[in-house]
Length: 221
Ligand SMILES: NC(=O)C1=CN([C@@H]2O[C@H](COP(=O)(O)OP(=O)(O)OC[C@H]3O[C@@H](n4cnc5c(N)ncnc54)[C@H](O)[C@@H]3O)[C@@H](O)[C@H]2O)C=CC1
Ligand SMILES: Nc1nc(O)c(N)c(N[C@@H]2O[C@H](COP(=O)(O)O)[C@@H](O)[C@H]2O)n1
Image (cartoon, rainbow, N blue to C red):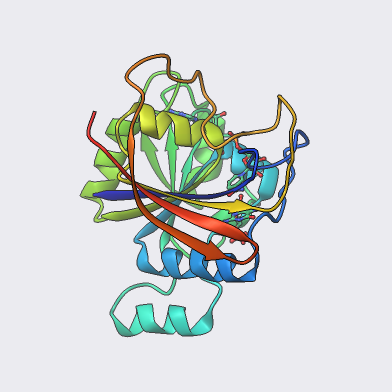
């Protein structure tokens, strides 16, 4: 399995403002790059915090890219993955529509009524007691044939994936905005590391739109 984390952050490292509303940090060229990366992926993953804040669709927007996938014998859109310990994904969330298969990763703590509501619209994977055990959930996703995973955020999920040693590559568009705010989400939130920090090898620096795209490979810990 190969896991690429892709996100857009402001020059001061924020994914959004303290209101946690979706904010366009990327420009047109970066959104097109993101679309191509989605098209190359078997699945696109987000945390439930992103579903609740942004209601993303996580589909490939460009018709030609979808057509190319179908010509290669793949579904037009990659699968979608929501990491959601207690099953808070709303049943009318855009990620649960019929544009692609959706996997919702739950913990044992997810109530039965939420499981029943989501089971009609998604494949459910249960791993972990109170929180999704990402190592186990991703192993199950791999068994389901998902090899190339793109993770779009948010900061809580990204931190946990680094903590679990699951990230192979980090692609960050740094956009021309200062957002600020101690409560605004950053690229990696969670508890933060105090030792054994994941280290990165810089693979590429590209000017894009009015910002820069940084591509990092994650070194083994
Ligand atoms: N600029 C960008 O590229 C992006 C920005 N965002 C922004 O990020 C914000 C949402 O991010 P967050 O609040 O950090 O939420 P998140 O999307 O990272 O979801 C976190 C939630 O996932 C669930 N979860 C279950 N198991 C977990 C585990 N093992 N580790 C971590 N989480 C687990 C928990 O309920 C947790 O609260 C929004 O403001 C959104 O707009 C989100 C995606 C991309
Ligand atoms: N790459 C990127 N740049 C930005 O500036 C952003 N605000 C985001 N946000 C994420 O994009 C996803 C939206 O997906 P759909 O267009 O609805 O398919 C979602 O994950 C946002 O949080 N990304």
